[in-house]
Amino acid sequence: MKKLIVANFKMNEPNLKNWSGFKPPKGAEVVICPSFLQLNFFNKIKNGFKLGAQDLFWENLRSGGAYTGEISANMLKNSGVEYVIVGHSERRKWLGESDEIINKKLKTALAGGLKAILCVGEPKEVRKHGLKTAKNFVRGQLKKDLLGIKKSELKNITIAYEPIWAIGTGTPDKPNEAEEMANFIKTLISVKVLYGGSVNSKNSEKFLSHKDIDGALVGGASLDPKEFKKIASIGSH
Ligand code: PGA
Image (cartoon, helix red, strand yellow):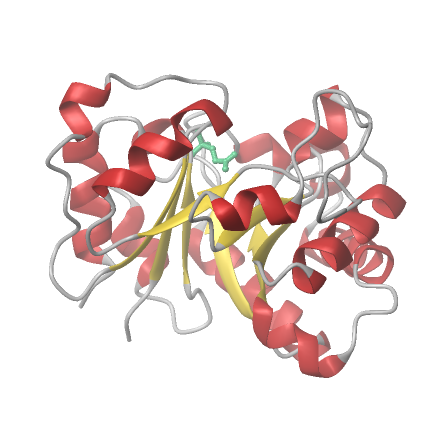
């Protein structure tokens, strides 16, 4: 099955020279989420991949509005964006994004015609009590983040399961436990589930070969186009 491979550049500015001829491997389904400042560049070179943003604001006034520093769904659409990451744990941590804010952003993304990638995942203190406790934590996040979202809207939402302790640490989850979590999420709602947290070209096959893991959200390893292409290639067959 074809997997969705999403690059999350976070607050990094990869050298655009290295990306100028970028084309994903044949058959791969790829989304690139650069910083807002590099969206325009990736929109121009877009060839066989989709464009994503890392965040949006919860108001979507077509005429714009007085929200200093914010970017609306409409502005993203006008920049060629189709996907938006919502509720990444780094924003929950550093920007204090609550489930309530995430829920508003999710609704705004969908109303604005964007596909949302909703990130959920437990901290280490939770996981140390076992996978069952982690599942309960994730269930709680999903309940709050998806409050008021209609079943018919779920087709435009992809869940990224990203255990916080696995992000940027070089210590990914065990593939079979990530699969178990993905399967659990699918017993709650009918969505695609990605795994994220220290995915690279060496370990991605172990995750992507599982049937309930529909793709990967890749941070650090997505900054190098050669490395990212390898992961996309593994996800394409
Ligand atoms: P990582 O980040 O691949 O660098 O662990 C993943 C993410 O936070 O989306």
